[in-house]
Image (cartoon, protein in one colour):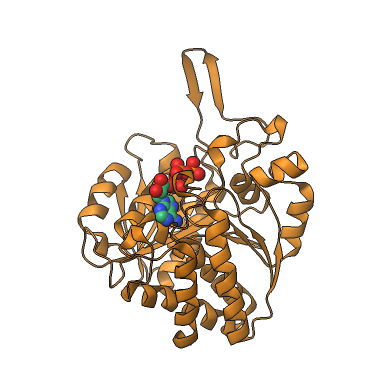
Length: 354
Ligand code: ATP
């Protein structure tokens, strides 16, 4: 499997280093034949190539089997004309990575505000309110006067149907329960279209039980009783917000692994941002990036019918759970180890997990 590795900004280099070491270990143990190519994007690329991402890099990623992208300093990249392109958006848009899969579950060993739960947020990734990606040309945020600004949200049947199908397929592999999250009481046309598309796709999945919640009420429900949910599907921005909440409910944003998947490509990228406040201090939690890497291996396993990739992915997840249970983790989830030391513990646990 050819994987392009891009460490990203902020805490990215630290958490990606741990992920790479664990992948090397998994490669040796499971005979994966990984070929990891190290590239740059974001601030490093801006300094070296005059742009945060390049066409050459995109071509290289397209030719590979998968991408691991570290967190990017999205807020710093404001002017595309100066090469400041948001790399996360760039890959999601150009590789058409329409499904952002964000699991969240509790772990033995981490004290949380709720009881145990295990759910997945499936977030549409290519349209919605995201001004930098929902137009073929131009930008969907407009300054009409200095005091008047407009933001437009694009919702299409094709994007709703394909994200709904991803969510139904995932629900079928899990507890066969799917929750639709929307604001169709106010956004009657756009979220009405989303609900209708989900209902249409649902015809093919009579074995999956479906319910739906208005997004604001959903925030209360998921905090009160997250165990009631299995798979949750929603539009882009609602999914972005909801999945940070569910990651934090599970113990920390640093547990938020995530996969961005399309029909032909996939990118593992932690759900959180570049966390500049803790960068370079060896305290960032590497589990989110490690779990994203495990999800990339699982995606490859199902796409190419390669069970040893699935076994490696499961073993990486188990290594994370075992580390957490033993308190071999970073401070954000109650441990005392640094990022590097957590990586060493993960490699030891992986050895015994197989
Ligand atoms: P960005 O501008 O790139 O989105 P941000 O700091 O605004 O960065 P996040 O990176 O999502 O947003 O982080 C929010 C907070 O969560 C951070 O301040 C950090 O303390 C914490 N955090 C995020 N990721 C981790 C992690 N992997 N380990 C520990 N803490 C984290």
